[in-house]
Amino acid sequence: MRVASVVSAFILLALCLVVLIRAGYILTIWQPVSRKLVWVVVAYCGLGVIANAITPSFWERVIWLPVLIICFTSSLVVAKSQ
Image 1 (cartoon, rainbow, N blue to C red):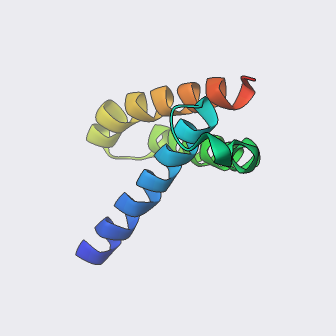
Image 2: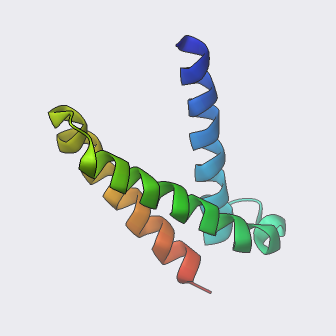
């Protein structure tokens, strides 16, 4: 389980980097590539919203659903900008 957690952390870090690049905060030379990759982030967050909305776990819905809604909304705003 620790390996899965580390892999998941690196995936989330990569997704954050894509959004930051697309927003123009870092590594602006990579913006043309981020134009398509940011939609992967939007899809990932959208699927996370759906998964956490239908989970039987009360605490996942209470804690992670709002977090993923914010992630989805903010990544969508960044994806549609510029």
